[in-house]
Length: 437
Image 1 (tube, rainbow, N blue to C red):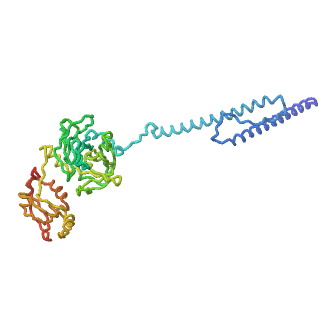
Image 2 (image 1 turned 120 degrees about the horizontal axis):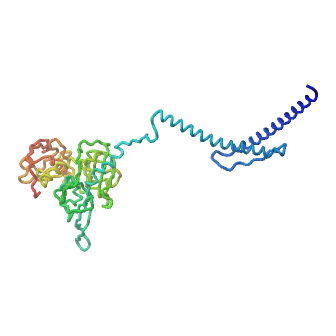
Image 3 (image 1 turned 90 degrees about the vertical axis):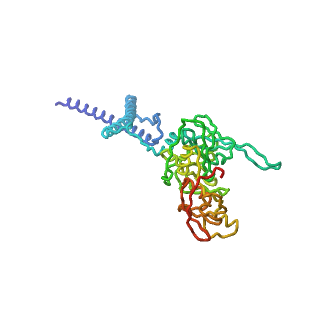
């Protein structure tokens, strides 16, 4: 190789080195520019998503002829980075979805296959309402009220509203005695679920039990399914259906539990009603006479009262108390109870009224016996204290009357009495109560 050839090679190497140096400088400038953009971009918050590209200072170029070409490279690089980031996110999401689908394919479960199963217990009230609402009726009673004024006794017409339920398809309806004015009514109107009304006829009522049976002239009516109140447990679900306050709220459904059993409540007139079912299902004025259902939609009670001084304290008459009465009225058209044939008063009231000690902690003091009555035949005397009938405790006349519903004409029972401070047992044959008593 001669000197000319060596000089040409050296010139070419020097030229290449110069080009490489320039390219390195341009690359360094490009890297510095990109790092400047990246540094500023990192200062933007993740939540501040903005499609406007951030601005930055343009780097100075060594050669003016390469400036435009270099900026093109940078723009391409930035767009590529942005697209790469977006596509990267899309690809990552796609990969996650593919992984999820792959996992679902492995387990055989998809979103459409996952079902949320709710137990029937959650919606038992809806099921009870669907089954039994059509058996509940509204009862409007018109009465004449008497009251005294400065100008003398006056009277006026008034209406009260309550509930009831159909126990037989031929128009037999159970309600409370106080709903039909304790028998002191001018007229009774029964409202059915189809919007029609019928005139009601009272077949039987008893203020001691606060029960009444009303008949309307309709057939083919839906009737309730009657349950067993003796099988109730505290804490089990309960549903009340009735017409609280007004017929505009007819067949209102309230849900609760059986809060207590064998309760008793006393009214201002001294009447005591027992045993009662306590429930926290809402019961208001107008619910009286309506049914209390268990979770199977079977009637277990007749709603009768609530404590006005507290919430969640409602009371119902056990349906088993009414069962024999209902059945006999359906079979015979009326119901007749047996009787003892005495005028009596509870021990506490008797002692307070006369200021005497009858030497008995509780019971019914015999004030008078009726001629020809079971009491006279059994040898009961004035001053005797009846404390039990067939072992069931008797504390008041209401207790005695209530117990007599368990017996029929001709039944022989054992009475426990206290006579002259000594306990005795006497036998008595019960008879049907005369119509005039």
